[in-house]
Length: 126
Image (cartoon, rainbow, N blue to C red; front, side, top):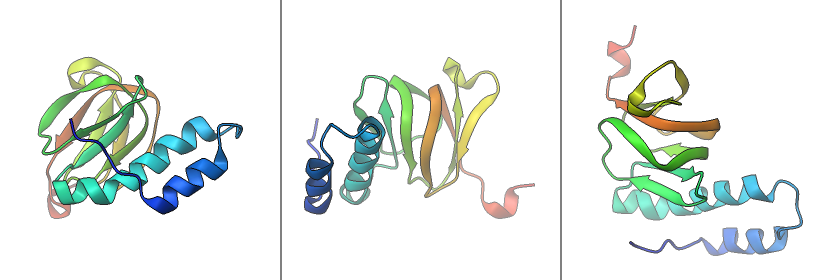
C-alpha cells in the first residue's frame, strides 16, 4: 500500500490545531482527504472515504455496487464521473442514506455499508 503525503500547509494547520480542539476528530479526516485529493487524483483514485476503522480508503475505478471496507463513516469524496449513492445495508439494499454528485464531498452520517456508482449523464436524468 502506498503512503499518502500531506500538503505542508495542511500539515502545519493540523499541528497547530492539536488534539485539544473538540472538533479535531471530524476536522482531521477532512483535512487528510483534502490533502490527499490532489495526489490521488493524479494517481487515478476516484472515490475516498474515512472508515469506521479510522483509515482512509480509496477506490480507483468503482463500478456498480461496492462494499465499504472498514465500514464507511464520516467524510467521503466522490471524484468519479458518476453519482455515488450510499446505503446502510450491504449489497446496496434498502433506502439510500445519502447521495454525492460527481466532484462533491461531504459527511455521511451515521455510517454506510455499501455504495452504488451510476454513470448517467445529466441529460439522461429525469
